[in-house]
Image (cartoon, rainbow, N blue to C red):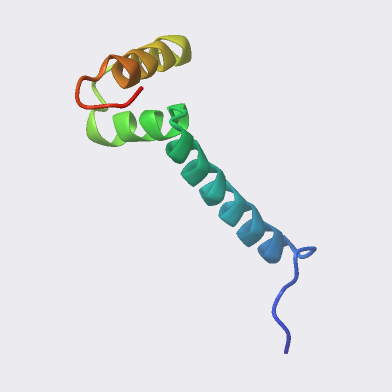
Length: 74
């Protein structure tokens, strides 16, 4: 019995899930805000609140990232 390869539906699904996880990690490493995770978090934790639209979310994340104080070399 062999394991499903990337051409079978279950193998393709696992491959895509892995690719999505890798992409999310890379985004976090370079500081790109993850709007989809934000929406999932808002639905789970604050279902009564209206989430920010994508443009406002990205603007606030960038402002928070570059406005941070502390010791930085650049």
